[in-house]
Image: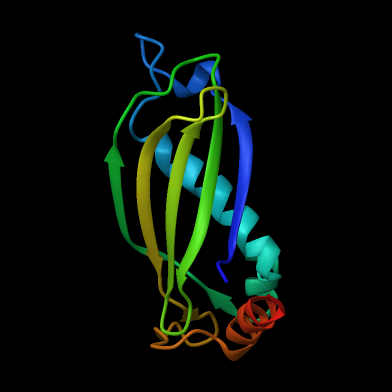
Length: 139
């Protein structure tokens, strides 16, 4: 079973360049929107992370631009959990929501950090792993 979440949102004017094309750096913001939806689905969004005394800084990002998104279009952003035991690795796909065309692929990696000690964790917190496995075992 795959664990994923998606969000649909419009390309806003403040996200585009002078040619009305989404500026490449804004895909990081789009990844964050999809990542938040996925983490909330897992029951381990940023407020829960903070309560559990963990932070998950991004350690790596890869983006492949395939086709431009433009002002006035709608984006369908899909986030799929790819790894969750040692780090959080998420794969993203962005589509033009109206045409269904794949426009961008991306991937992010996040590593757990204990907020009390500042130490990097080489495994994800047990509560996060348990939440993921509970969802995956339902299917």
